[in-house]
Length: 114
Image (tube, rainbow, N blue to C red; front, top):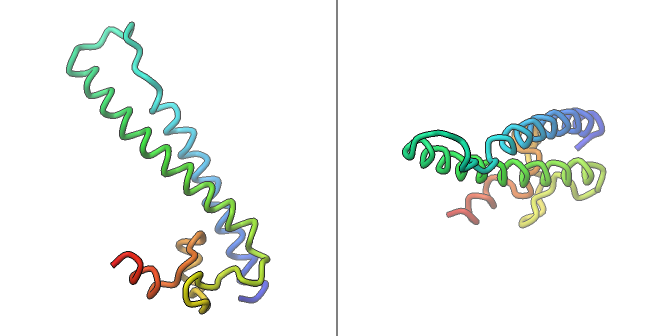
C-alpha cells in the first residue's frame, strides 16, 4: 500500500471514528434506564425497557467498532497493516476503504465464518 492510499484510508478511518462517536453519544442517551417515576403505562414501560436493551446492545457494538477503528488508525503506518492476519497476503484496498478495521482478507474471513 502506497502513501497516497494510506492517507486516503486514514481520512476514511477518521470519518468512521467520528460517526462511531456520534452513534455512541446517541445510543448512550437512548440506553439510559427508564425511571419508575415516569408516568407511562405498563405496556409502554415494557416497550421502553425492551428498547433500552436493544439500544444498550447497539451501544456496545458502536464502542467496539470505535475501538477497532482507533486501533486501525494507530497501526496504519505499521509495515504489516493491510496484510491478512491468516495468510499474510495484502487485503484489497477497496475492502479496507469499506471495512478499515478488517484484519482478514475475504477468503480467510469466509473460511473462519463458514
